[in-house]
Image (cartoon, rainbow, N blue to C red; front, side):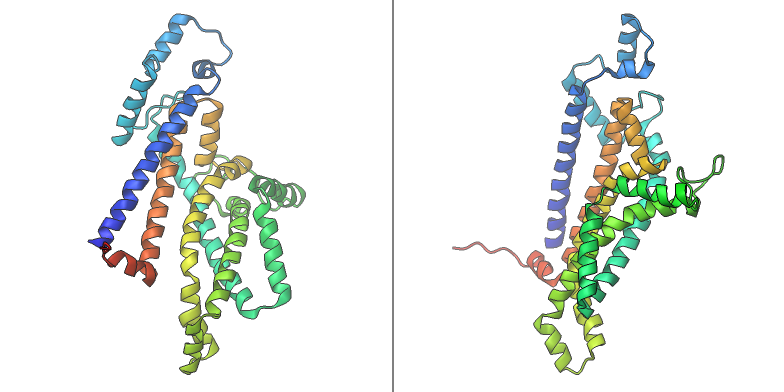
Amino acid sequence: MAFLKHLGKILFSSLILLGVVITILFLLLEIAPGDPIQTLVGDVPISEALRQQIYATFGLDKPLWERYFIYMGNVLTGNLGVSFGTEVPVTQLIGERIGNTLALAIPSFILSTIGAVIIGAIAAKTRKRWLDSLLSGSSVALFSLPNFWLGLMLIIVFSVTLGWLPVQGKAPYGVEGIEIQYMILPLITMVTAELAFKARIMRASMIESLGQDFMDTARSKGLSERQALWRHALPNALLPMVTVAGLSLAHILAGSVLVEKVFGWPGMGLLFIGAIERQDTFLVLGIVIVLTITILIVNIVTDVVYGLVDPRLRSQIKRPVRSES
């Protein structure tokens, strides 16, 4: 019951945060400059009667407060509205693109996490000065590089100069599905910064674990250095990586917007940028809602997993709070 109450608090706060995000973005899109109707029809002048008809079609003729509550009610039922430009349901447009985004985000998350654990553990265990300096310097440099700039540099080197890899899209024109060679450059771009950041976190956590008293106890029991490392140091060093991994996946999803634009990858990021350019309010809101829900779910899972694997937090959840008399 204590764990369920803890989970309920997390879910409640997440729902409040989602409502705040939707409200702020809805108001920002309302006060944004430009006319979405004129953007929809282009430079062609339209009559006032046609403008009012289009406004009525999309429900834009209603007061702001009424449109807000109608939209919030639709969101609760899973209806994210209709795109201005195509008159296609927003959920359908997102459903067609979300798989392409996940095809980059999930491998990026897995590769960066596994690589960071290995590199960080090796750097902490060996304590070689050149390796430590290389890891620290490259981590700061790679994490500081904007991913869109790194993507452009990779295109110049491997696509334009060497001609080894394709530049745009996920497959040759007219071919369905995703081909591996089209994923290489976007994956490198997305993995690099995350790998560098998480490797530094893993290294610091591993060094702290190696200096704890339980390592001396493990050695005194006759365990070899390798056994003590794998059985005691590494599991404890992985605890901070649970939180970092959750934040990393959220960062990867957010950063995929620019990466997809650079490489012409037909995912949610490219769809999002196109919706902003067309002032497609419902599509922008829909994509942000889906990304926000995804990030909230990742954070909830991260919090729950951390509470399960960390005995200190697990004991805090189970221990009843006693009032001081």
